[in-house]
Image 1: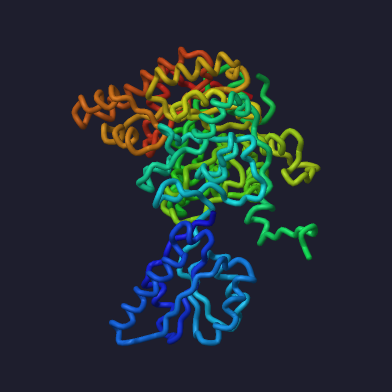
Image 2: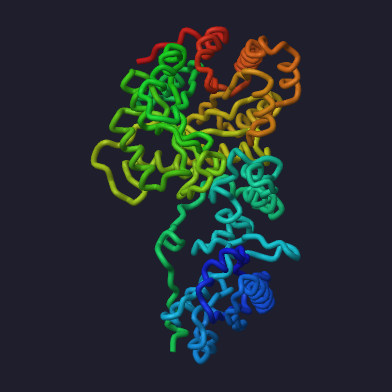
Amino acid sequence: MIMAKAKPIEEIINTITDFDKILLAGCNGCVAVCEAGGLKEVQTLASALRIYFSQKGKRPVIDEISLTRQCDKEYLEELKDKMDSYDAVVSLACGAGVQFLAEMFSEKPIFPAVDTCFIGVTQEQGVWSERCQACGQCVLASTGGICPITRCSKRMLNGPCGGSENGKCEISILVNRDVACGWHLIFERLKKLGELERFKEPAEDKDWTVSRDGGPREIIREDVRP
Amino acid sequence: MNSKTPSKLEKILAAGHLAVTSECGPPRNGNASVVQKKAEIIRNHVDAINITDNQTAVVRQCSLAACIRLKLMGIDPVLQMVTRDRNRIAIQSDILGATSFGIHNILCLTGDHQRFGDHPNSVNVFDMDSTKLIQTVRMMRDEGRLLGGYQMEEGRPEMFIGAAENPFADPFEIRVLRLAKKAAAGVQFIQTQCIYNMEKFKLWMKGVCEMGLHEHVAILAGVTPMKNVGMARYMKNRVPGIDVPDPIVKRLAGVPKEKQAEEGINICLEQIAELKEVEGIRGFHIMAIEWEEKVPEIVERAGLYPRPKVE
């Protein structure tokens, strides 16, 4: 799931302060699950903005909606009839949703209300953590199901480095929290699986063309195209 | 072990001598004489000098430029190279540039994370890690090929390939295997992390010898003299991957402040004496951090002077 977190409200206020009719558009997909951009967060943000502007003697129209998803056209189209009534839209979707909204309504100013952070999991209630960097060429089969690209701060394929201590990554000391050494985790897991032999041979070359480094990516599936 | 490259360090090791290397950290400015002055202090007491590559991710004069300076002084430089700041294009380009100046040693490192340094907001590269860098240099040297497949007609690198190894990082069980992996990649010498925990180091070396790795890879034991008890405490508590046992801290704390530097040198000399007896140790890498002037004294008192001559 794509994880996001709310932007500071001051930043959102700055982007919309000159508009009179504003639509806050949430997304019921990933950002709703991580409690950053669903209907509940739309309502909270709308209330906060109304309070702020009324204290400044302004009363802009601030309407609320949350779409099933903002990364699919069919759901964005639900806004078609409404769009003319607004000067600007604040999207609480991930970066993909914000952009798709802007593509569909190209004359309308669209502003993001969240910072999109990573692909991750709900570790526990209120704690989300990263698991995948969408590198485009999954190596989990050879690393005990633990991703070195994501979990190692240096995305090493032949780890761990010399900075791993008590199972913690060397950056722990700098970020004031315990960051697990990804390669320590891989080691423990491979040991359990009886696959430590994997450590003896250097890893294959990583092809970054299928990652971010190859430019914006696209998947075309002729078998499912109309 | 027959030497294959013009590297003086390789020749010293091939002749069966205990090698001595040290390092110079370049300045955080463009001063032309800092590295030269540091190198002059130690040049007659070591076989080769490492130039660090933006160590702890702090911006400094580049390793390659400083290595060229050493080379022009007639010193055998060890080009330290981290994969943090360069992709495979820049890495291979720098190796070719070093080759054009007759630089014949490289130390392949992944590098400290950039958040440690003076530009924590920077992007990191890590197109490859240290093990892959070792493989890359070996391929360029032995096959004359670049990673992209280009076959060099001439001007192949002739590099003695080194790497670091830290027996004190966790998990300990993997540290011998990790050296085995670097050996499989083509590493020929290792400069270890500074050794303070002798017991753990010996345990690691035992594993290294049991696997026969010491026969393919020359292990140079890393030592760093402590200037004072403050440095010992800092290294113990703040530097990841460094293991300073309490008795060392206590020993330094137990002598008056003005005697602590001397005590630090004594500890270092005792370590070298003890390490000389450890099977598989082929030399020493003396990292006297901003304390280069002590290197000649350490080398002499350790019985490692004069340095052997090789052709």
